Length: 540
Image (tube, rainbow, N blue to C red):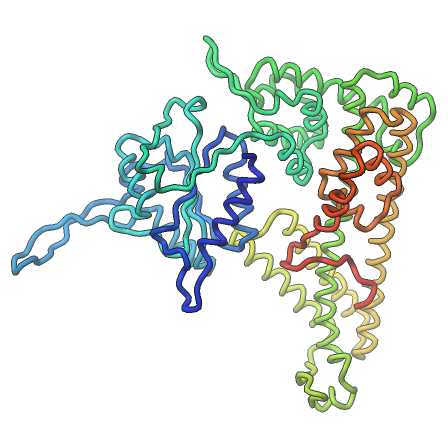
């Protein structure tokens, strides 16, 4: 199965293993909670999905590459303990707690998360001295005399023998005690992930032309030549930083990540052409609507790989805008949440009369509201501090993505800036303070709407160019298909109804897919704060 399906299967397994009955006992007892064994090629994303699963399930994660361990660090060190049996004293060998098991307890102490995942990578490449202990751990969840705590699920991963000469085959007895999931590389699934991670558009367009070069391992007399999804992702980040520094990588740089001479040479040539396409087609100008018939004719007569490069650059330009708009929307949701708290602290619940609020009394069974004497700007600072504490806590527990971290930081900075501005006004009237905050929020909301309009305009201009250059040809099919696999694009299309998007879906991707696409758009949004976002509100 592909890595996306594997992730779903593991999440379902965790949900089943952590289900408790009415007495608080796990429905599936620990002894029957088979460890999950992921087997797949290197770099396919096994470790990354474990991090994603832990965040999404809000449980702990301890990860080890088991080949880095000796028997002593995994099992513990021996010591002599005196024990009495049948009236006689004996010297008995005991073991200190395994470093791995101790790490689980440390993680529980640090994060307060009593349930989690222990992930052991390269499980089938352990040394000969460690192999028996690892088999015992897979079968009994015990290292020496120390057991993995209840509520912690064991997930292991390994590579097939063709990828690693050190692989040890598990016997039937061990395999009969694990849930084995075989994972295969899938370019389509990886591209969905890649768009969320803003993988370099040159890589995406190149793999669109050469999908067979996504993941390959070959062996000859000169050794192994290989390329993996991890290699493409790491190269992408390096390319983006290189571009920020004003540098352009050559083949010698590419081969450091794509360790297949033929593919690295081919991609280096493609990347050089890609940079030429950037200069020749001026994508930002196209997205702003500034292109002429000559440019369209030039694109129409271009070879296929050049058409793919142009399409990829247009999609990347759109993705950047969709990503910024999406993050802005998350910030708006966070500000909405915090300003509602500020309103209650400044003015009390809307359903209570002013007299009841001042008296601290409750009407019609509503909760009693006591207005604090804290200054309005101090209330804002408190809300900013709450965001900061929330961010730091989630980060410490490993439950925060970089995108979510940026949302929290921007929300905190915005509230702090408003607090400073409010403090400088010197106002002490709570109604005036609230009106000030409401105006600032409305200004931010207006910027959000302007950003939405700008993205809509860029999308329409992209369709204008694609129609003029490629009509309803293969490039248009690829363009629309890529929009369908982009979470950022789908979320934006949930806010903005683009008629041509639906038209080309219907004409190019067949009528029966239309409902599925609309369903994906409706379901695509999931907020970073554990709630289903409804978009920024104009009223607080």
